[in-house]
Image (cartoon, rainbow, N blue to C red; front, side, top):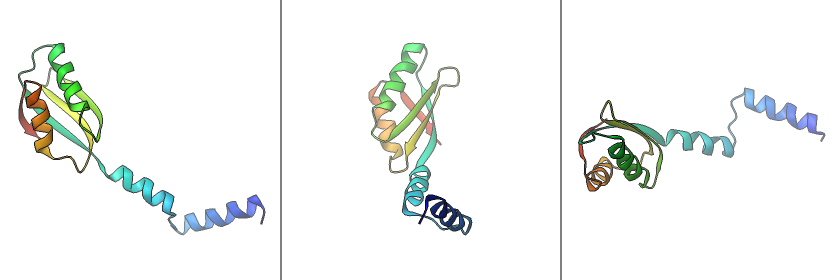
Length: 102
């Protein structure tokens, strides 16, 4: 079978919404990441926001951390299996208080 024939068959299967194992794993991986907003009390300078960012980045499963000093919050992209208690514990160990986690 030539390469063009393989492409035609694969395209036909794709159009019929046939899912390969590779695509299923890729889609599931994307669904496992969630954004959480953490309101934090006690941050007053850029050093504080850097300390919070470093603490949150140290959690296994955290993909991205953005800390806003103006809004006193951190936006984190995490795996779904990370509990709010773990986030709170890490922030409080850095010397700050978690007000709310959305």
